[in-house]
Image 1: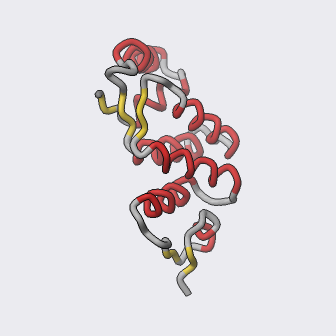
Image 2 (image 1 turned 90 degrees about the horizontal axis):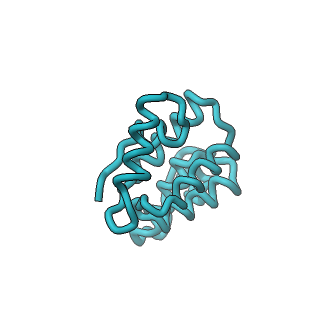
Length: 131
């Protein structure tokens, strides 16, 4: 397995830098395979969403599309993919940040009964509001 950082994923998805995008594409499509996949840590997903929204001004629908495309690339493996998929579905259905959706899903996957927050927006991801 080959670990892949956010900047490589962003260049691969955006295809906006001739040199770096080509190198990222060569890595993901040429060197990674289902037998020797590229590994995407969950923090890379959060950073990719942040970069997409902040620097590329992607809409929620575009961010969801980026994540769906990323999750479907056969030669990539996403850390805790079940929680990532659930977080994506919550992100698409609720008005909350992807990071909050992911925090909630990871905690639930680890056996937490609930996830407490002071953030009203984050409570839309399924977290419980601490009063």
